[in-house]
Length: 321
Image (cartoon, rainbow, N blue to C red):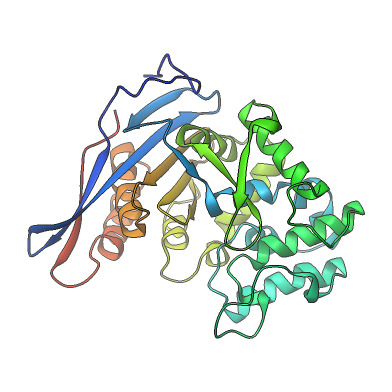
């Protein structure tokens, strides 16, 4: 049932937060407190656990929405490339040769030199192309080249590129862009501080099928999950098993967002202490509750992500209501 509070509600009453427990030989060792919310494209709160207004930075879960300009500006179509370029633009990749090559191809087709990248070179690596955000940055630069915007300073909040990103996110949320609070992410690009319910709303739009640009990005992520994260990583393994029904994109500090394709439903998760293992455990528990995965896919993912090592298991207590 939809909440009468909507996205502007301020009440903290409701179902309690979820708890993730790390069990060692069946005995509790560590605990994580987690908030989660499901919304539709109208912003109605359909289900929740904990505080739907929980504020956090959306971190890399913002990437599909930052990539909108790459598509809407014509930069992607102008390159004549494959969907792989859109997938790498939305990625937090491992920096493998294949992934770095995809980011390079975005720059090469746009006739932009790699030296313009402002994401840092990871320690022990040889190039900024191996940074997990290089695809996003390459798409940023390709968009600037297409639109005639300066390549220098493309990460500044006041740059035309970042202003366009803010405007598009604000439009999806139905709020003025001036109300969006930003901070610098680890790669140097702006990220946004949002209530959890607004993160879920963004993903409801991503899966809604009503906005062509977001539909193209979502389908590219599904078609090439190996570029979005990497072998053995949660987003990649989940989308591989979702039968084309889910888009998954995590962010640092305990953020996990998912879209149910074709139904316009978004699920957003925040772990208070920033734990990755806890967000994966909660995501799988809620996907089971929502029946968004087949039993065989559920079993395979639980075996991979709920058992950190021999003698340990993650258990989720609580549910969406």
